[in-house]
Each structure stands twice: as C-alpha cells, then as structure tokens.
Amino acid sequence: NIPAVNPFGERTSSAPSGTLTGTLIRARTLGQAGSSDTSMNESNRILVVDDDADVRWMLDRYLSRHGYAVSAVEDGPGMRARLGQEGAEFDLIILDLSLPGEDGLSLARYLRENHHDVAIIMLTAASEVVDRVIGLEMGADDYMTKPFEPRELLARIKSVMRRFKTSAATE
Image 1 (cartoon, rainbow, N blue to C red):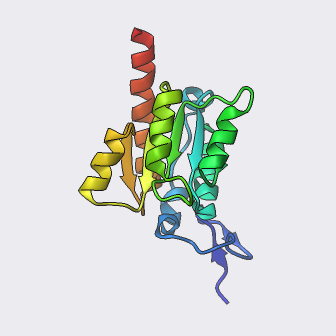
Image 2: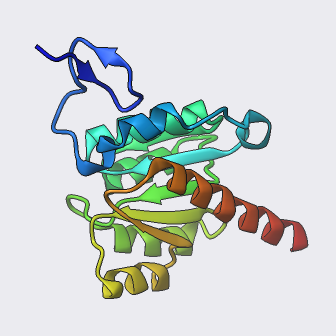
C-alpha cells in the first residue's frame, strides 16, 4: 500500500476527493515553491472560478501559502454571488473557460462591463490559438492552459497585478 501524496508532496492517508487532473501532478514542484513574499501579496485578493474541485483546492492552498487572500467558486452564478457580497472586492480573477452553464468567455465579458478594474487570467484546457485569441479579446489579461505549472501561474499573477497597479497609479 503506497500512501497518497497531496499536491504539496505531503503524505496523507487519502488523496483529496475527486479525480486529480494533470494540473495536480506537479506535486513535487509545489513543495519546492520557496518562501512566500507576503509583504507584496497580503492585500491582494484572488477569486478562483473553476468547476474542478481539485484545482480550486490546490490554487487556494498554493496561493494562500504565497500570501494571497483566495476565495473559490465553481461556476458563474457562484462568481456573481461572491462579487455581489458586501465588501467582496477582488484584484484578480482566475477564470476557467469551460464551466457548466455560463462559460468563461461570457463571464469575462460580464467582468469587463461591470468590474473593469479587476484583472483576469483565463486558466483552461482549451489550448487552440483561436481559444487564446478569443479569451484575450473578451477581456482576459493573460491566458494559461491546463495542465499548468503553479510557479508559472504565480509569476503571471504577479506580472498582471504589477501592470494593474501601475495603470491605476497613473490614472
């Protein structure tokens, strides 16, 4: 009997619920992510919108370890409800393209029309050039395909947030 290993390389008695996707295979890298720079990140709030519970769990845990305040929902109605809560303001939204019901493209359009000051990173299995172009044209600030390297996503988050802060400071 081989013990289960979670995405942080920690041995557990059982794996997280559900089927682990290719996104979670990089457990060893997560365990070696290095120290977090909480001084830069502690006020940055991220909303993860993904129908895969394992991805939501992994991103919540990984980004929290790097000083981000993370909330996660599974679909468009959950995103709209979270955005509608009093005091719920996010600096960045990580948005899956293929969601049940309303897809990520229409959610990105909604965000640009109603929450223009939030950064959007599309994180999806759709990897065709046309998918990336449409995602960016609909308002995403960056686009990553699954499976993904969490350290690269973290670098992209920092880059997008840096651009947004610079843009806000010049306005």
